[in-house]
Length: 361
Image (cartoon, rainbow, N blue to C red; front, side):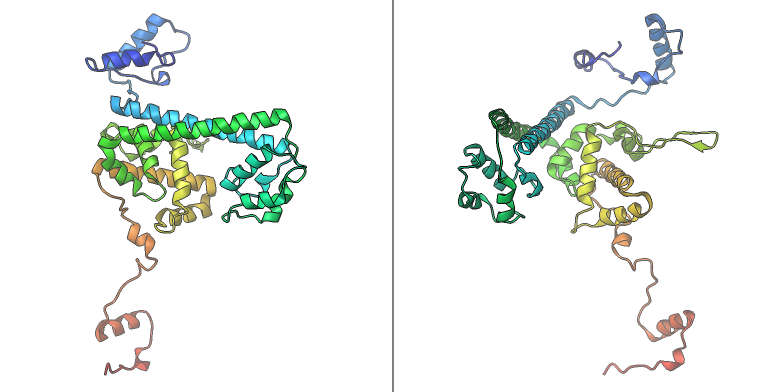
């Protein structure tokens, strides 16, 4: 059957209990150009499958497919939330409100309460004292700067209505995202031990671990090795070489949902002060390859760690952790007794005749 959009899913759900179904990407079973008919295509695919040349795509179990649907729906909701925030900022710019250039977050409590106050007043009726009371202590900007940023604002009726609807939609999206996350935690409860394992990685929260498991599942035997998993996630560089010349080795477009999440986790991991393992790795790679390639490399390292942690049910404990954390790890260590100390100093080229033995008493 040729897959068109989502039409293969109900058939797959109906037949998966009684039959072994293979879903494959068309680029792996494409026939020779110029000899393409539906009958020849089916015969060609049957011949490839007969000789075990058809590689099946990864379809997770039914419970993880439901979890994946929720996780991807949450991703869409977050994208919609970002779009609404952009529309609100656009309205603020048109209405000559410069809060976004003063406050680090134009949607913090201070900015939200000030916008509510401005919508219910005009530039002639606003009171500076009332605005100062709305500014929270955690705001990183001074009161005078915030008041200066809203002077001379003019919110037209069309912009006011647009702001009102966008802010209401933003609150509605926040509520939907919260409900989706609660449902994710309910579905992942039977596999919560894996969530605890993965969330021990620096930069990964329980929610991030849940979304990762929703995409890859808990059966790592489906993937050949950790490299196969990284390639499936789109975190491995391509291998494109001909006649000794290397062409583009950019990462693939695979992992449209998982790759952005791993990049965000990598950005959080390199800022961790409690566990600076990935921060040290990032610093070394960035010197040679730059920030973007270093972040992808860290995301790939984290995915390799997740593969081994889930497959072996072991906590985060890389083999080079002690060596990386201790700068003197590779230096030779000597025991403190007279014979070995003097022998070591002589081997390093020091003149031990100038030394004298100290009396411990």
